[in-house]
Length: 293
Length: 293
Image 1 (cartoon, one colour):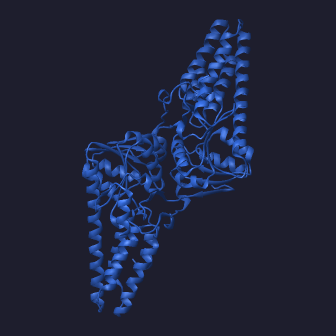
Image 2: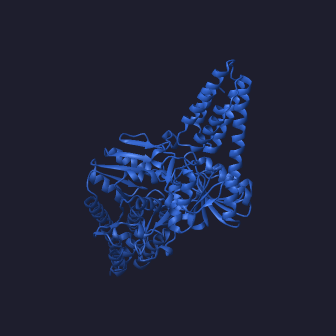
Image 3: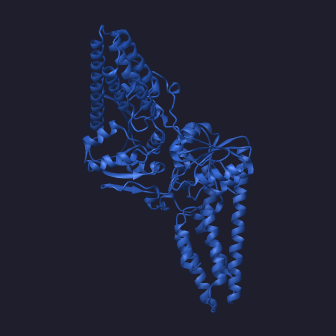
């Protein structure tokens, strides 16, 4: 895959979550470092740095991409490697270490959620989060799930398949039923694409509605994510991604404009706990200290 | 149409609102009275009463059907008509009067909403309510609309068409975006299938989520409906209709059960005003007096 193709693929991907895409960016940097035909060390270094910066800009709403590539850039720029071979090695090692760190953080965050929630509970979730899936995997089959379709494109269908394969009992609902079914749940649990500086959760559109219903019905709303997902930006400063409205086939009519905003912002007031790889934060003030650290 | 077919058609209809279906029931009684081949007056009367009671039971969640047919039954049962011809006439006149009364109530409720909201506003709505459409009709084109798809089956698409034909600017969104777009609205306005005794609004699933988002964003949430829609039952006593989940094509998988609950309950605490044909009620206590009258 060329550098341009990689950037485009990351920009166009609507299937994978932010952490998964961040790891794909790091994988892409490894492949690029291995295959790029450059003999001058400084040119090679500049090309790799340029690609990492382009990837950061491809999905500005996704903090894991910004953050993991910032770590990669720091490791890579600080290295004293000055031959093409050494540069390729440094680029590869830094990326591989960060991929492992990211996967480890996901597992730790999921483990903290598992301890917090416990077995024999009914969990309602929205969208398809690899962190939330890891929680279900650890609790299976002693857990029940309420899964929303999560249109568009409906990635809740894939979650239902994956939970079914684990033998987990699933109630599958269309999105507008979440207000009804939240009453049957003990806890609402979602992942996040990005956590804004003061703890707002930026996640698939509809997450905010689930949080509102959870509060109104008196069940806890947990966001579970790796610390890499924390942004230093306020929610207003984070652009909410749009996709082509054609994805849900809206009517084409005079005076009618269709929208397809992919993410919404769940204000921190609606979050009962932030479950990270570091620990479970029950208070926004404590959590805000972490994100500003 | 035979009596059995009529009851089945009312039971299966997922396109029309409760008031429209109530009028269809009355139309059906008129047709049945005209066409039924019975020469004995008492048998004719018993058949008509039997059909009205079957129709009431076809959609127990829809107060307008219960109420308009109760009015019809009262008028019909109290009449002293004792020839088949007189009985047919009484049945027809009572039904026609109630159809006119129902349409008049819809117009008055819509007019009260028009006065309350005024021109140059952006109204967000969910589902397709003939009362809400009458409000848009009166305000067109000096009003803007945010219309949700309202799956399943997506009757918001028909509303968008109807508003487009009136020259109204429409933002069309999939259901899970309502939390985002409520911020662009001045007011949330919905119809109702039934209003429970203490003012809860029973309407298409998703209405509760819209009301939660409206409260959280500080915009008023108005329910606009004819007094015929008021039930004497508490919300817990009103069955929420289910439809075949196949309507939204859920995955068929082991351990996975799909649901398609059509209505949700918006608690009266979330309602800013109840806009009826009688007047606008801003307080639940005053409104509750009306419904218990």
